[in-house]
Amino acid sequence: MRNKKKERHGHITYTNKNIPVIHFLKLSKNLSKISNRYYEVNEKLTLIGVTGTNGKSTVTHIIAQWNYLLNQRIGIMGSLGNGTYNDLKPSKNTTDSPINIQKFLKKMLINNIKTIAMEISSHGIAQHRVSDLNFSIAILTNITSDHLDYHKTVENYVKAKWTFFSKNNINTFIINIDNNIGKLWTKRLSKKRTIVVSINKNFNYSLFKRWIHAYHIIYNTNHTYIYFKSSWGKGLLKSQLIGNFNVTNLLLALVALLDLGFSLSSLINVCEHITAVPGRMQFLKVPNKPNIIIDYAHNEDAFKNVLQTVREICHYNIWCVFGCGGNRDKFKRSLMGKISEEIANKIILTNDNPRNENPKEIIKDITQKIQNKKNIHIILDRKQAIKFAIRNANINDYIVVLGKGHERYQIIKNKTYYFSDYEIIKKLLEKKYDTNIFLSSMSYHKRLLF
Image (cartoon, rainbow, N blue to C red; front, side):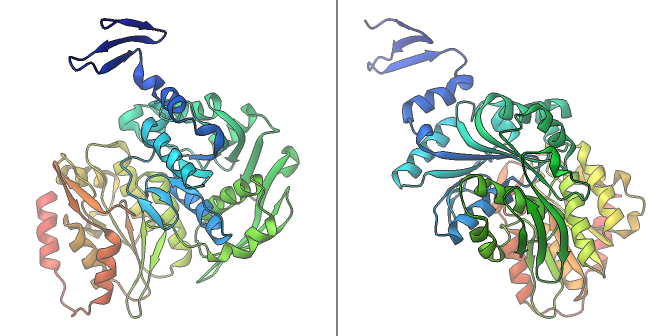
């Protein structure tokens, strides 16, 4: 029968070369289910899904590093790439298409890797990319406003995140309850299946069955010391990571591995060897040059967290180098500008990925709520902006380069150029500069924009 063959979900037609074409109603909504049935790997794997506005990459990579340090192999899927620790292939999206996800899971299974830590984006949830996957663990890092260019409202954005927890088949929920949304969701989720994480001094562990609480945190130049209590026991974590948000990220990863059966003592013993994730509070320092931190922060909450963390360890000037992406949420631009003025001492505005927007208009949006515009340097060429900061900052100053993090490209109009903050900074730190600075050039850039 070559015309039409009726099926439960649609029908089949044939091309003139006798190739079957399956017509499927609401294909995108059902593609995860179709892919799952074709590859048949989900039930054979342990999936850890990490979602939230900030911290997804950090948590998945901390989990991967901890496994690696304990001689265990684990797969990773997310914005930093897909693969295994130290062997990642570039990914186009934070959460890939349903078919590519299943294809990757099949590849991991063939290579005898049966645990996967996966970033789950709001786009991925809304577009049903993970709707038919079963997760052993789902982790919520935090939720603040983001991606409003896509979701339109904060309510829609939060609803998308909640869909992952309420609709997917999940064994264990791990929730950061220092976030208001997380606190609310613990009331909706099964208490038996929920683990809560907190660094809040007022945390009341008697309200929960399984929990972990960092009750004392000490920062020094090289390490963070985290004293914690938990339903597994108490201990001290020594970490190279800095910032309260990274303490939370570390604890989220810790309890995920405890839930999978790792011993608390083994995890504590290797914790100090976990390093910063590329482009996430990544610290660069060479003798006689300023301190530099690279971070992916590109919304107001992440922006504030990073700058406040740097302010706690920096007793001199903070130089904040950043821009905002074009053709994306415009509302957050002025908020990021305001935060940079409140915390940083020097502000250098530059291009991020302007895409098809006029870079000058993006800068104007950023500066709307900045009171003292005389404190701003505007250098649209991102490499020159970073160079200017390095040449003019003092040795004890901190330069914080925000927005692109791990990215190795820059999108200007319809073209994508190779660009890496990390590689540029590394080369600039190795150079010896004279004392000449380009203040006249800076003034010229200002005149173009104000």
